[in-house]
Length: 362
Image 1 (tube, rainbow, N blue to C red):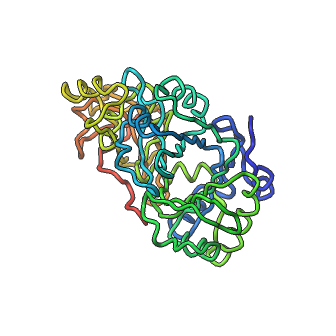
Image 2 (spheres, rainbow, N blue to C red):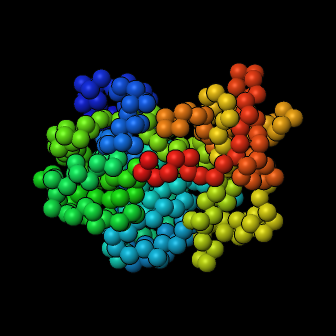
Image 3 (cartoon, helix red, strand yellow):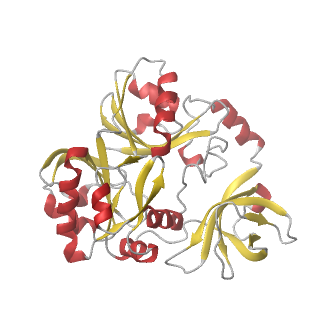
């Protein structure tokens, strides 16, 4: 098990640590409810330095990424980022990731921590353009400052006009006395905010400065448990749960990042799936009675016959209702469809709803 640079800092703050994706990570410091609402109402600081950072450089770097990923990388200009995914030969998802265009022929890929080695191998196996590939995951740390007060907390620490960084854009500049920090606005909470990519040797000092600047706004350290409830309220997918190597982007509702106007791995398989129609879809549901839906719980029709399973579930700290994502046959995927969730041998009524569960900024 590895540790991020801030491991001792988390312990000093009273964090509950647990293994996650090969790292000891802070799961929570106080309570999930408190940390979740701090992000929704004010500002929270996450250490997500377990994430992977790859750098790809070369004349045909764009061509390689066009082939490896489903979204259209050619649309990216320097300073822009893009959500995408890599597919395997059968159309399943190798990983979902964010692509940052640093310049002409130069990109950074941010991948999930549990998939770093797998993704690196996959990219190198398919590097038919002999593009330079660098896995710098052990060199870089990543801090996420999320919430409606994030800009006010961070602005005193940089001369960059943060309000001018649009959603899925970024700049590379000085931050908190550290040069060459990648400051982006992608987010995984729906509450607004920024991500900071910087070398590990600077992480501790920058963490301290953010906390000092955030005291006025009641900034809180937040763990992965709150990050999970925040992303689920938005309906954002989590790899290994909502999307896997056995689910396709179309089944997962990621058709919007699947561009058939260019060639990519398993394009023909996905085109065929689209033409024939999907047999199952990932849906969002909300319980109509009290209950806590959990990953793996069965989803059934009104006659009690199993039709699917929950991939992610929780009680929304904002809505105070059980919410979740799960795969069901396409016939049961329409908004308003009545379902049942099996919780401790009891069938709880639920309804398919349109995402997000909670509006952005709430």
